[in-house]
Image 1: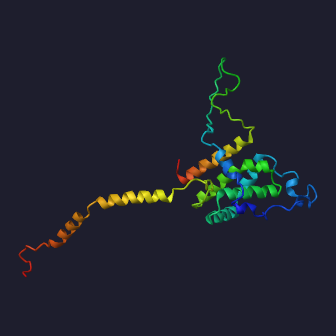
Image 2 (image 1 turned 180 degrees about the vertical axis):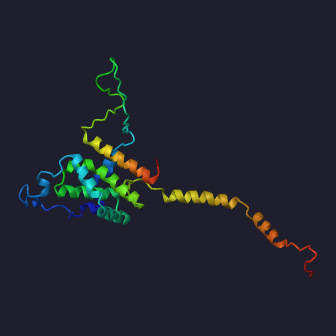
Image 3 (image 1 turned 90 degrees about the vertical axis):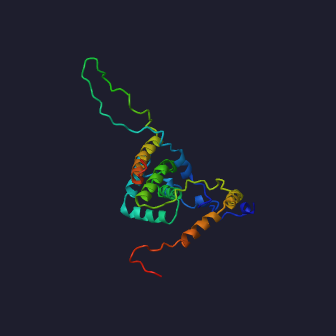
Length: 75
Length: 168
Protein backbone atom coordinates (compact mmCIF):
# COMPACT_ATOMS: atom_id res chain seq x y z
CA UNK A 1 0.00 0.00 0.00
CA UNK A 2 2.78 2.37 0.88
CA UNK A 3 4.47 1.89 -2.50
CA UNK A 4 1.28 2.73 -4.32
CA UNK A 5 0.69 6.30 -5.51
CA UNK A 6 -1.80 8.04 -3.28
CA UNK A 7 -3.76 10.83 -5.01
CA UNK A 8 -5.11 12.09 -1.68
CA UNK A 9 -1.90 14.00 -0.88
CA UNK A 10 -1.92 16.02 -4.10
CA UNK A 11 -5.69 16.53 -4.00
CA UNK A 12 -5.57 17.86 -0.46
CA UNK A 13 -2.55 20.10 -0.99
CA UNK A 14 -4.09 21.67 -4.08
CA UNK A 15 -7.17 22.78 -2.18
CA UNK A 16 -6.19 26.30 -1.26
CA UNK A 17 -8.83 27.13 1.31
CA UNK A 18 -7.06 30.25 2.57
CA UNK A 19 -7.62 32.07 -0.69
CA UNK A 20 -11.26 31.05 -0.80
CA UNK A 21 -13.52 33.95 0.23
CA UNK A 22 -15.84 33.31 3.16
CA UNK A 23 -19.55 33.76 2.86
CA UNK A 24 -20.63 36.99 4.50
CA UNK A 25 -24.35 36.95 4.60
CA UNK A 26 -25.30 40.57 5.08
CA UNK A 27 -28.84 41.67 5.04
CA UNK A 28 -29.23 44.15 2.29
CA UNK A 29 -31.44 47.08 3.07
CA UNK A 30 -33.70 47.47 0.12
CA UNK A 31 -34.49 51.03 -0.67
CA UNK A 32 -37.88 51.77 -2.09
CA UNK A 33 -37.12 55.07 -3.75
CA UNK A 34 -37.74 55.83 -7.38
CA UNK A 35 -34.03 55.80 -8.15
CA UNK A 36 -33.46 52.49 -6.40
CA UNK A 37 -31.90 49.66 -8.30
CA UNK A 38 -34.46 47.23 -9.57
CA UNK A 39 -32.10 44.25 -9.82
CA UNK A 40 -29.94 43.13 -6.90
CA UNK A 41 -26.34 44.28 -7.20
CA UNK A 42 -23.52 41.81 -7.42
CA UNK A 43 -21.37 43.84 -5.00
CA UNK A 44 -20.21 41.87 -1.99
CA UNK A 45 -20.99 38.49 -3.51
CA UNK A 46 -18.00 36.35 -4.33
CA UNK A 47 -16.96 35.57 -7.89
CA UNK A 48 -16.88 31.87 -7.17
CA UNK A 49 -18.08 29.59 -9.89
CA UNK A 50 -20.46 27.27 -8.08
CA UNK A 51 -21.02 25.26 -11.22
CA UNK A 52 -17.48 23.96 -10.65
CA UNK A 53 -17.74 20.87 -8.40
CA UNK A 54 -14.27 21.53 -6.94
CA UNK A 55 -15.52 24.89 -5.62
CA UNK A 56 -18.48 23.22 -3.96
CA UNK A 57 -16.16 20.65 -2.36
CA UNK A 58 -13.88 23.48 -1.20
CA UNK A 59 -16.86 25.23 0.39
CA UNK A 60 -17.78 22.05 2.26
CA UNK A 61 -14.18 21.71 3.34
CA UNK A 62 -14.10 25.31 4.55
CA UNK A 63 -17.02 24.64 6.87
CA UNK A 64 -15.37 21.50 8.28
CA UNK A 65 -12.02 23.30 8.61
CA UNK A 66 -13.72 26.08 10.56
CA UNK A 67 -15.21 23.53 12.90
CA UNK A 68 -11.82 21.83 13.28
CA UNK A 69 -10.18 25.13 14.12
CA UNK A 70 -12.80 25.67 16.80
CA UNK A 71 -12.04 22.24 18.28
CA UNK A 72 -8.29 22.83 18.23
CA UNK A 73 -8.64 26.42 19.39
CA UNK A 74 -6.39 27.76 16.66
CA UNK A 75 -8.83 30.49 15.57
CA UNK B 1 18.11 -1.89 -8.86
CA UNK B 2 17.59 -5.58 -8.23
CA UNK B 3 14.26 -4.79 -6.59
CA UNK B 4 12.87 -3.43 -9.86
CA UNK B 5 13.59 -6.68 -11.62
CA UNK B 6 11.46 -8.62 -9.16
CA UNK B 7 8.14 -9.86 -10.60
CA UNK B 8 5.08 -8.04 -9.28
CA UNK B 9 2.56 -10.46 -7.81
CA UNK B 10 0.04 -7.67 -7.12
CA UNK B 11 -0.66 -7.08 -10.80
CA UNK B 12 -3.84 -8.49 -12.35
CA UNK B 13 -3.59 -11.65 -14.42
CA UNK B 14 -3.84 -10.94 -18.17
CA UNK B 15 -7.46 -11.32 -19.20
CA UNK B 16 -8.75 -11.00 -15.65
CA UNK B 17 -11.03 -8.15 -16.69
CA UNK B 18 -12.79 -10.53 -19.09
CA UNK B 19 -13.71 -13.09 -16.42
CA UNK B 20 -17.09 -11.44 -15.83
CA UNK B 21 -19.78 -10.16 -18.18
CA UNK B 22 -19.38 -6.55 -19.20
CA UNK B 23 -21.50 -4.48 -16.84
CA UNK B 24 -21.69 -7.22 -14.23
CA UNK B 25 -19.31 -5.44 -11.88
CA UNK B 26 -20.73 -2.62 -9.76
CA UNK B 27 -18.21 -0.05 -11.07
CA UNK B 28 -19.16 -0.86 -14.67
CA UNK B 29 -22.80 0.05 -14.17
CA UNK B 30 -24.36 3.44 -13.57
CA UNK B 31 -23.20 5.02 -10.29
CA UNK B 32 -25.66 5.37 -7.45
CA UNK B 33 -24.50 8.95 -6.72
CA UNK B 34 -23.42 10.51 -9.99
CA UNK B 35 -22.77 14.06 -8.75
CA UNK B 36 -20.28 15.40 -6.22
CA UNK B 37 -23.04 16.83 -4.04
CA UNK B 38 -24.81 13.50 -3.80
CA UNK B 39 -21.55 11.72 -3.02
CA UNK B 40 -20.76 14.27 -0.29
CA UNK B 41 -24.21 13.77 1.24
CA UNK B 42 -23.69 10.01 1.16
CA UNK B 43 -20.33 10.21 2.93
CA UNK B 44 -21.51 12.82 5.41
CA UNK B 45 -24.40 10.63 6.45
CA UNK B 46 -22.22 7.53 6.64
CA UNK B 47 -19.42 9.18 8.57
CA UNK B 48 -21.65 10.88 11.09
CA UNK B 49 -22.87 7.56 12.50
CA UNK B 50 -21.50 6.73 15.93
CA UNK B 51 -20.40 3.24 14.93
CA UNK B 52 -18.34 4.56 12.02
CA UNK B 53 -16.76 7.27 14.17
CA UNK B 54 -15.66 4.76 16.82
CA UNK B 55 -14.11 2.52 14.17
CA UNK B 56 -12.42 5.49 12.54
CA UNK B 57 -10.98 6.67 15.86
CA UNK B 58 -9.58 3.22 16.55
CA UNK B 59 -7.92 3.06 13.12
CA UNK B 60 -6.46 6.54 13.51
CA UNK B 61 -5.14 5.64 16.93
CA UNK B 62 -3.35 2.62 15.46
CA UNK B 63 -1.30 5.00 13.30
CA UNK B 64 -2.85 4.60 9.85
CA UNK B 65 -2.32 7.85 7.87
CA UNK B 66 -5.39 9.92 7.00
CA UNK B 67 -4.43 10.01 3.32
CA UNK B 68 -4.43 6.21 3.01
CA UNK B 69 -7.67 5.93 4.96
CA UNK B 70 -9.45 8.51 2.80
CA UNK B 71 -8.21 6.89 -0.40
CA UNK B 72 -9.35 3.46 0.77
CA UNK B 73 -12.83 4.76 1.64
CA UNK B 74 -13.08 6.51 -1.72
CA UNK B 75 -11.87 3.44 -3.61
CA UNK B 76 -14.36 1.23 -1.78
CA UNK B 77 -17.10 3.63 -2.89
CA UNK B 78 -16.01 3.23 -6.51
CA UNK B 79 -15.84 -0.56 -6.23
CA UNK B 80 -19.31 -0.71 -4.71
CA UNK B 81 -20.65 1.39 -7.57
CA UNK B 82 -21.60 4.28 -5.31
CA UNK B 83 -19.84 6.91 -7.44
CA UNK B 84 -17.40 7.21 -10.31
CA UNK B 85 -13.63 7.44 -9.85
CA UNK B 86 -13.55 11.12 -10.86
CA UNK B 87 -16.23 12.00 -8.31
CA UNK B 88 -14.15 10.05 -5.80
CA UNK B 89 -11.07 12.13 -6.62
CA UNK B 90 -13.05 15.33 -6.12
CA UNK B 91 -14.49 14.16 -2.82
CA UNK B 92 -11.10 12.97 -1.46
CA UNK B 93 -9.99 16.25 0.22
CA UNK B 94 -13.36 16.60 1.92
CA UNK B 95 -13.09 13.03 3.20
CA UNK B 96 -9.65 13.79 4.61
CA UNK B 97 -10.92 16.91 6.34
CA UNK B 98 -13.81 14.92 7.80
CA UNK B 99 -11.51 12.16 9.08
CA UNK B 100 -9.20 14.74 10.63
CA UNK B 101 -12.17 16.38 12.31
CA UNK B 102 -13.15 13.05 13.86
CA UNK B 103 -9.54 12.63 15.04
CA UNK B 104 -9.46 16.15 16.49
CA UNK B 105 -12.76 15.77 18.31
CA UNK B 106 -11.61 12.44 19.76
CA UNK B 107 -8.31 14.01 20.85
CA UNK B 108 -6.18 11.60 18.84
CA UNK B 109 -2.68 12.48 17.68
CA UNK B 110 -3.12 11.09 14.19
CA UNK B 111 -0.77 10.93 11.25
CA UNK B 112 -2.15 13.03 8.39
CA UNK B 113 0.23 11.44 5.87
CA UNK B 114 0.97 14.77 4.15
CA UNK B 115 4.64 14.85 5.11
CA UNK B 116 7.05 14.13 2.32
CA UNK B 117 9.03 11.00 3.14
CA UNK B 118 11.67 11.89 0.56
CA UNK B 119 12.38 15.22 2.21
CA UNK B 120 16.11 15.45 3.05
CA UNK B 121 16.71 14.72 6.71
CA UNK B 122 19.29 16.43 8.94
CA UNK B 123 22.58 14.72 8.32
CA UNK B 124 24.30 12.91 11.21
CA UNK B 125 27.58 14.62 10.29
CA UNK B 126 25.92 18.03 10.81
CA UNK B 127 24.64 16.99 14.23
CA UNK B 128 28.13 15.72 15.15
CA UNK B 129 29.63 19.07 14.06
CA UNK B 130 27.23 21.03 16.28
CA UNK B 131 27.96 18.74 19.25
CA UNK B 132 31.71 19.25 18.72
CA UNK B 133 31.48 23.05 18.67
CA UNK B 134 29.31 23.13 21.79
CA UNK B 135 31.51 20.67 23.68
CA UNK B 136 34.51 22.92 22.93
CA UNK B 137 32.63 25.93 24.29
CA UNK B 138 31.71 24.02 27.44
CA UNK B 139 35.34 22.98 27.90
CA UNK B 140 36.37 26.63 27.86
CA UNK B 141 34.15 27.54 30.81
CA UNK B 142 35.88 27.29 34.20
CA UNK B 143 33.50 25.52 36.54
CA UNK B 144 35.94 25.24 39.48
CA UNK B 145 34.95 28.63 41.01
CA UNK B 146 31.39 27.49 41.45
CA UNK B 147 32.49 24.42 43.43
CA UNK B 148 34.50 26.42 46.00
CA UNK B 149 31.51 28.63 46.73
CA UNK B 150 29.46 25.60 47.56
CA UNK B 151 32.17 24.25 49.84
CA UNK B 152 32.41 27.58 51.71
CA UNK B 153 28.71 27.60 52.32
CA UNK B 154 28.90 24.18 53.88
CA UNK B 155 31.73 25.11 56.26
CA UNK B 156 30.00 28.12 57.84
CA UNK B 157 27.96 26.88 60.78
CA UNK B 158 26.06 29.49 62.68
CA UNK B 159 26.56 29.36 66.44
CA UNK B 160 23.54 30.05 68.62
CA UNK B 161 23.96 33.38 70.48
CA UNK B 162 20.90 33.42 72.77
CA UNK B 163 20.97 33.25 76.59
CA UNK B 164 19.41 29.78 76.58
CA UNK B 165 21.83 28.45 74.04
CA UNK B 166 23.70 25.28 74.84
CA UNK B 167 27.32 25.66 75.80
CA UNK B 168 29.72 23.14 74.44
